[in-house]
Amino acid sequence: MKIALISDIHGNLEALTAVLKDIEEQGVDALYCLGDIVGYGPNPCECLATVRDRCQKIILGNHDQAALFDPDGFNVGAERAIRWTRDQLESHDQRVRRPEDNLFDFLGELPRSFKEDEMLFVHGSARRPLDEYVFPEDVYNPLKLKHIFELVSRLCFQGHTHIPGVFTIAPEFVAAAVGPGT
Image 1 (tube, helix red, strand yellow):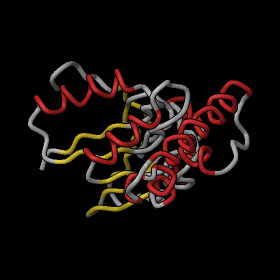
Image 2 (cartoon, helix red, strand yellow):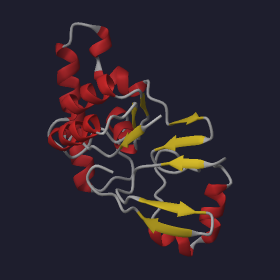
Image 3 (cartoon, helix red, strand yellow):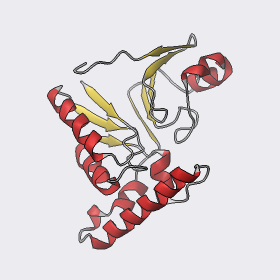
Image 4 (cartoon, one colour):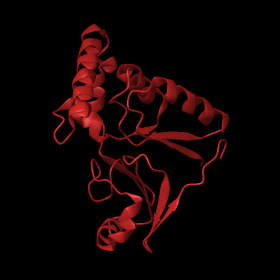
């Protein structure tokens, strides 16, 4: 089965639409979202509705959670964006007629992770699925990676850092060599 993963959309409908078009052309069997559907971009409601309608599996990201609750630990710009996003969601939800179209309810029902076979899907890390960053320079912190790898049976897919790549148990980081159509 060919699975496409998307993550860290951050309310950018134009980018999401372009990515979904490419995914359709690739003949993908399933589409999973690893969180952060909202935050920063001008179209949080449209992105949430699109992801809800198009993705088979969806998990909560830290920006999604911040829109539901409080943006603790966010910088001033990110906090401002989350508060604006929350206003957009509240305005949307006041206008909907069908309960299943309520975007706050949709966000509130999302899991923080899920497993499929020997694959773990998270937003942050296996250790802290919502908000832990795992950066390429973490290869110089083998204890951190060891603790994370202890929680992974075979594969773990994560978003959050906006840096595509692969961590190995070595520890090593291999930058993703992804081109259009691959």
